[in-house]
Length: 263
Image (cartoon, rainbow, N blue to C red; front, side, top):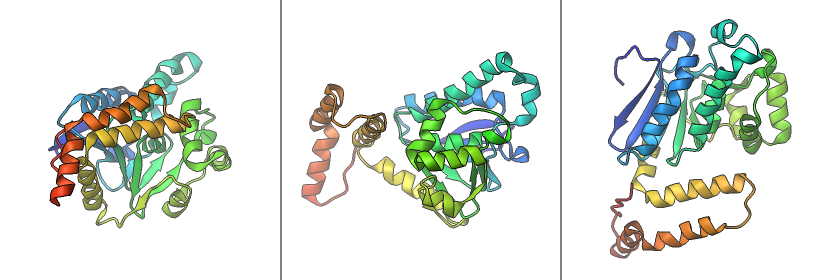
């Protein structure tokens, strides 16, 4: 981790990208500048052929992200007109993260609340330590979540639990979050960084054509698909012509680890 004054920044190590939220004094609450900067960093990751997986995390163990920085609201989110630009920035951040081609994992320590929970839910997977605390709190502020943001909650937790979470604004501990699907793994605090990056490197070692195709097909299913479209069928058939498919079969026959090269 580098020393920096940037509130949000990207680090690249081999094939792994990590985006750090870096406002520990505010529990990594997102200000407007960070919402605007995040899509730029995400697009940089998706367009870099050397990078295969993204980890999104807080800069330390105190918090993943405590949500939006409410201290800005009186200035730049005071009414419907001034809020429009802010809402557009947050929507673009969530949408860009949710629609990345490459797999994304939220490494969660401590608070994961409001917009922070929204960021985590926009990732493909969420790993948390035992101190993880989760909540989506528009009812505490009088805000209304967008349809896209609400759909991500419903897709993961179901309609009735989504209503419970949104209407009550209550904070859940990590065990409840795991039970309803907000969290995919609970890992001891002293091991979460190591085990998360071990898993990330495992994904990076697999056939990336398969990894990204699986992500795309799951997204299609969540959007209502029950059978392969022509485009998806072509994606499936094209796999047989990739070098990685040939390498995977050859490695299996030779009883060795495959050396996949697709990026």
